[in-house]
Image (cartoon, rainbow, N blue to C red; front, side, top):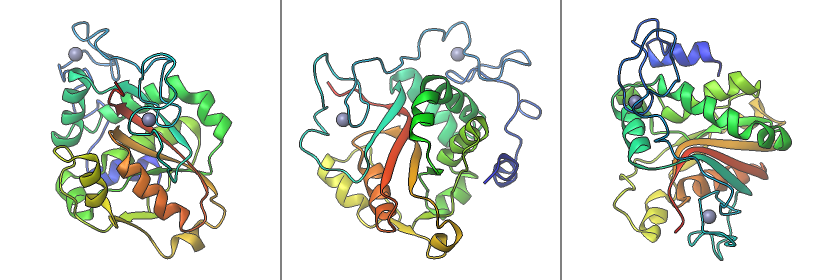
Length: 248
Ligand SMILES: [Zn+2]
Ligand SMILES: [Zn+2]
């Protein structure tokens, strides 16, 4: 899907032409031409994932730790992944605006940060497609957009990698994951995704993908998504998320 379609599907402009430009962290209105720039008050409040991260999921861990608690001893369908920001209070506010208050324009900022931090990693993997984690159709209609698709759309523009958002669907309504334990999260998501039957005919050459999402917590969403992709012989699966929790 190209950006034009995303703009069409969101039903609004996601640049500052129609909506005022805002700080992507606090939502404060900014001067024209400042899209994607953090305001003075929020400067330095976004915490980036550093060098000491889990080798599997990219969650910050204490030094000399290879894997975080969630990844220790766990086999996954994906190879590994990365995230840009630690999900601190500022990113929580930003993400809430992005997901629940129509601030679709923040997606460009998230993609820009992904691109800045991980361009060489993406190039090295050289995926055949970026796959945004799908939301259930009812939720997408209510919200007006799928937030992961917005991020993937911008990242696709920046990298020139095709975005495929019609391969995996979310067929099951899932309860919000926030309050659930790891085990409950997995059960909650079991069977939540499916592969669109025609997609293998449409995209026969896709073998390697990067899944795009907004927040990574325990990894059950990415795992379930990877699991269905593997069922159609997409064997090289990575992920890239905007935010991630801490592993300690
Ligand atoms: Zn701000
Ligand atoms: Zn991990």
